[in-house]
Amino acid sequence: MGDAVSWLRGIGLEGRSATAGREATCVRSVAAGRVESVLARAGVRCAPEVLTAGVARVGAVALNFHPDRIAADGRMVTEALLADGVYRSQFATGISNGGPPPR
Image 1 (cartoon, helix red, strand yellow):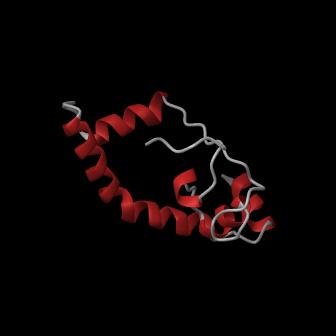
Image 2 (tube, helix red, strand yellow):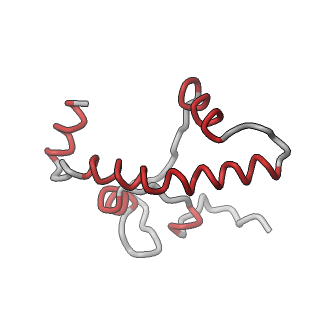
């Protein structure tokens, strides 16, 4: 944790991790409701907390992005990520891999 705080301090975002933590706490119940809804539609009987605990214990998530690409709002992906503290999908940023969107 100390290394992360040092890095955030070095780029001027020392307090950002605390803000991100508060934001995550605020949206946790909304996210749990969405997960519960998806599980119900799929016919899976599992509490969201059980599922997310299992993913946290054994899962891994890879986020792939092009940090130098320009998003629809004119900012580079890295600028938006640092300023907003939010990873956005290609649908939110308007950046695609070059293929047509599914229809």
